Image (cartoon, one colour):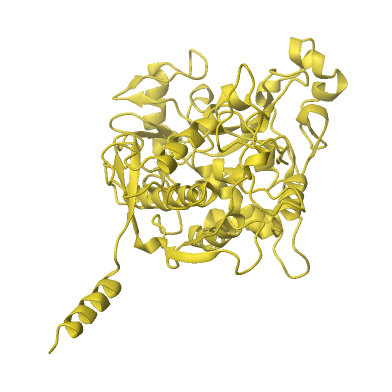
Amino acid sequence: CLSFHNMFNVYADAPDFTMPDVMATDNNNLAYAADVLEKIYNEVDFPRNSPRLEKSLRESGKSRADLWAFAAQAAVHHAMDENNKACAGEKDFETGGRCGHVYLHTPIDFPCQINMKFSMQFFTGRRDCPSKDQPKTKSWYRPRDFETSRHEVHPSPHANGAATANFFATWFNFSRRETVAIMGAHALGGFHGSASLFKYDWTRGQAHILNNQYYRALIKSPSKMSSCDEPPRYIGGPQDTPAPTGWYVRPTRKSKSGGPYLWFHYYKRCPECVNGTNIETEGDGFFRSDFCCQECATKTVKTIHKGCYMEVTKDETATSADLGLHIDFDTGPGGIPLNCDNFAVGQYKWGPQAIMYGQERFVDYYRTEPNCPLQKLDDGPGTMAMHQLVELYAENQQRWVDDFIPALERMLSNGYSEGELKPTFNFDCVKCVRVRNGFSCWRVKKAAEAWEEAVAEAESQKP
């Protein structure tokens, strides 16, 4: 997220990258990540137990912008590697094995592991903000060295698919395909309510690994809900079948518009049970009864008691900008989704105050499941529509990876002309391992490179 907000070139007369304006609300909480990177930038031995450098990155003339770009690529590299470890059933990955990998328990028609058949390339030469643009010191605030007073342009999480695609086209020169591909990064990480008023994760229990689960959720692929316990559990339908899924859109009632409007991913599933005992926390009392555990273990979708097989949401969400990649809808004041069948009528008939204070009647905002047409924006004749790209990436993980990596490299080069940034190394030479609450990365020699060096050394020692 920090690297994305760092990659804007918002002024035609200012080709250098701007650092986040932390006084603007779109950058809420990003300073925490930037503060950690600032210690790495300025200190020779941070974090603790890491190799000690002869000079700090700052002293050796490196730019913060290059460090932040490297951090983004290292995180992607590491999270895809974590995915592969989870696919192999390894326990010692980022989540400590608590959540496992849902693909091991849900039928998929593609390999779980990602093949990094062409590695990310790291480029250097990015420029930091000039010191003249640093905010002025105030009696109540001393700006950090990496801050800028320039105002940034940001995408709206309340926007629909067309607005999201237009934003990436305007500020990154991205095609529709690149836009859909780069948004898959949302599989990694989650929301922070104190910063954005959004909450939960895009992929519950899987937020530390990077794969194509984001797209599978968007197209409502049957799946199972992850329960991060020891051992991890995966809750589906009767007799452990995959659960049908869908999306409800709900007003969270945290702003004047009744929003932000958050999309909740539901699973039509059974309750969570352990050895016949119901430990479910969602649904009504009947759904949480041990009777439903017995029903789910012995009955089928057709014969199970309907009170034991329900559409349930739990801590898995997305924004309108996400859903808009696959379905087409409009948005009104405050981000209210509009113009699809089955949107709650009260959202528009009574207005935001009615939504805020519950003045509407006979409107079920909790289970509003819109029936929207597919998103048909494309890059021109002979190209795939955005909804088709979402579906392609959902069913072919490798195709997404092959499109995502170049899109990420382009994003991290935004604002620079061809040849201005210099290639430094490929990430197939980088090894990352988990250390305490983070991870450490270093460059390793490929076998071919090590062999060439050994041969050269042997030749040099011949008489």
